[in-house]
Image (cartoon, rainbow, N blue to C red; front, side):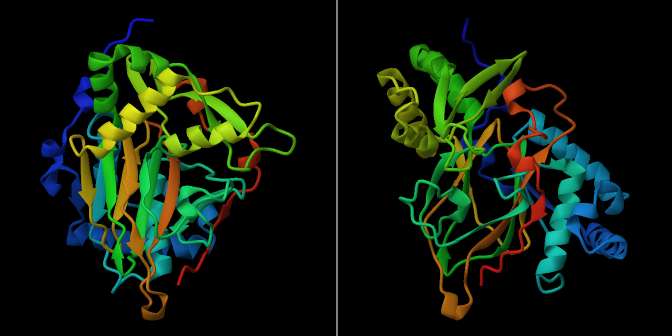
Length: 339
């Protein structure tokens, strides 16, 4: 296989994103009113989010803007922050419904875990970092290294911040891939080979506790990236998992160092009501450590969506939504009260 840079139009550096105007979309007063009316229409239909699709959350003018954002997520910068919904006006249930409805205009919800959560929680859920079944959205206080999630798009809605810290950071994985191809094609070639990932105990009954997936995949002229370094390293706890090669270890270390260098990343300070959407195949995300103060009611709590976009019409088989898998057999909306 001949390696070459891919989707160079989607590359960006930190200086390209230094101005928040490059990635922030602020809703106008008229669009906010449209969202408020859509919340009312959705509530009139059903109290169950699972009954609400894009057609049940009518956004007659904002819809066109969201379609432009969807195109930009796939063919452009790969990340957007939508701001404008004020928690002083919209309570948590209304914010979650607005998030669900806006998300429905960007894609279809994708189960995130073996519980079947299609609207999940990112908050301290009492899991210890050393717990082999812990996933990043369940871990509190600690920072998370740059990684991808398991869908076309990932969305985060900020409900509340902690007492301090917890800034969101995103990094352009297209630029990382292309830089590695240009500078160390030997390491890039290693990451085109399947790598083992730990299942975190969420495999189907009787199935093995790990799976294999390349970090880099070329599909036509598109680049697909799946990088969860912590899970790749954790796969080695399974005796039957393939052993990581020295080249793979060096390549993973290169990716982590490059992502953390600041050359291809930008930090976003979430405000309650903010909605961030990311193209998982082109953008890594992480966060800084944070501190909660439960006594003061300052507990960091985000809601999460995984979405399948219609704009991306073709993808490798292992990046398709597994609608028959055990994660998809029971779809539910998580109602965790983090406070």
